[in-house]
Length: 563
Image (tube, rainbow, N blue to C red):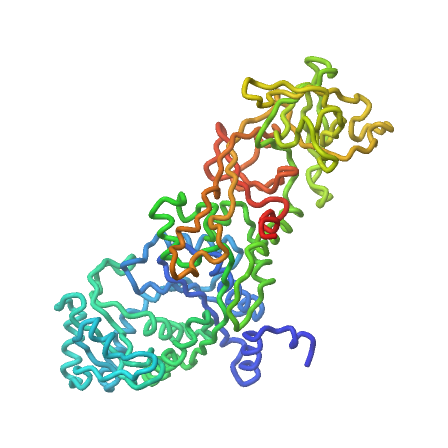
């Protein structure tokens, strides 16, 4: 076996085996089939990456198909958001399709199944059907309507379609096996009556097909070669094949290829909720500002927070493809964005919690323009200019009147270097009536300017601080985000609601001061605020008011909390 073969994941091995056993390269076709009932989240990126990744690897088309069979929950807003997210991730689909495109074909095939004695109209209530289906350890019992004649089933099904019955009065069920150990095979429902307006078909249908009936037949109509889905659909594979094989008799001339369903483990992430229903609750109850809130695990939320498509694709590649469910530490995702932004984000200076520094021996009114490197990881990033003056802002936490030997920042009587500038020494400080420090008086060494070539300019001091010149500082709103939940698995507690684990400090809004080079920054631009972390320009930012989001810190602070 070649090295390439050894490195194939199990899905790629399946494709390779199928190619070796007769399927042609031209017959390969994959699909990503989201339901448009919410925004895509980080969990979906694995399915997206697998299907579109196979398309790229085998130069095969990938369909984007919206499984839109439930007009109660589906909206055009979600369709648009899903398309935007996939494009942002850098993937291209071959055809944009909708299960609703096939409503007529599915209805026609359902009629043929009725005529073949393989489907019937059931008039039980949903509660009666649930009882009659049995349990995982007890077989089901036949519906009293299972033996209806073909003619009666045909008449009732047509009346269902024509809107002559109330919702819940009848359903169409496949006639399979009420004794099957797989409860999904116990005469599953194929159609229900639903008087709701569909986002594409309007009010033209009074009955809507169920997911299991629609999904596999849509794959079949599209001639998808490999239908890839997450592990919770493994029990559905038997039903998928039953529907596929029974429809094949009707469609084999037009649709000769039989799709193959295979399953992979879902992407589960620590400190994260993946349920669309629960994410919708966060939106509806205004816990977050919307589906694209930067604390949300949605792709649009990650994008707004400053994540890059490449960082997410790198994350998915590292996670890999497996058959076993596991939980991935969110720290890996955070590591991937740090890794990517370290290479690409320009360094700038910003102060989030300012305290004033006055350099008493620096000439009043004097200003200098210093040169700073944009990104030491990118030799093509160039330099920028940063103004320097007598009065500066530094971070409040970077100064203490007294501190032990392990505190290498500014303290009375000790020196630090100002990034790209001079060495300063704290001489005294001023406090208000509450004892809060309002100003720090320092002196500077005029021969210690960075890059000046003097011996003093390379003199070693243990601390280096970032700063902003007060005369040139630009005020900005900074939204400091943290994880939305305090618990690793917020929805795994049977006795507690996931909302109980919300992090009350997941968002803190501060007024910061940034260097003037950021005045030209555009929405979406990403930066490293030196010594603070990675930040990006938020959608709310305007020329009058700059708004930044904290994407991630320079290091994993949660790892320290766990120790």
